[in-house]
Amino acid sequence: MLVLIVVGIVGYGVWRVSKAIHTDKDGQVSISTPQGDISAGGGKTYTADELGIDPYPGATSSTGGFNMNTDKGSMMTAVYETDDPADKVVAFYKGKTGLGEQSFMETGTTAMITYKKGDKDVVIVSINSDPAQHKGKTQISITHSKDK
Image 1 (spheres, rainbow, N blue to C red):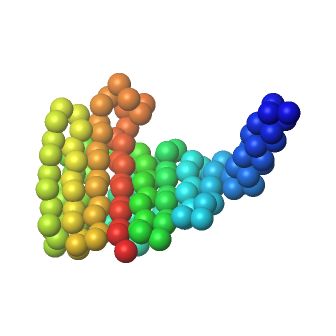
Image 2: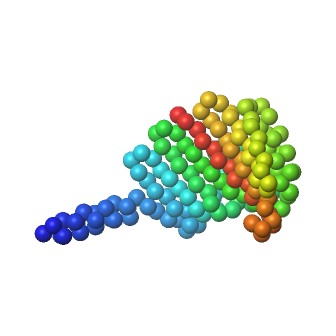
Image 3: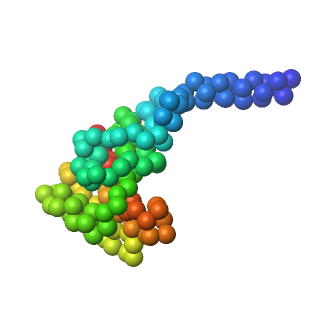
C-alpha cells in the first residue's frame, strides 16, 4: 500500500511540473510558479528597456538568454556576439554607463562593467574576446536586475 501512495505522490508531482513548463516554437522554455515566471533559451531579442542599456550596434543575439520576474523584482540575461574587437565594445559600454555609478574590471580576455543605475537597478556587461571561444567573435553578456 505504501508503494502505491509513493507512486501516486510522484506521479502527481510530475504532472504538476509538466503543466508549469511550456516550450514555444523557437525553443524558449517558460516555467510559471506562484512566486513568478522564468524563461530561458531560444533566441529572444530584448529591448534596451529590458536590458537596462542599449544592445551593441550590429551584434547578433546568441543562445543563453534568461528572464525571471517575481514579486521581489526581475533579472534577465541576454547574450550577443559581434565581429568587432573587445576594446571597441568596451569603449561603447563605458560611454553608455557614464551617467551612473560604474565599476570596470579587466582580466585577460574578459572585461566587466558594472553599472548601478539606481538603488535597485543594476546592469552588468561582460565582454569576452577569447579567440579560442565563440568562433573568434567577441561575446557580450548583459545582465539586468531590478528590485521592487
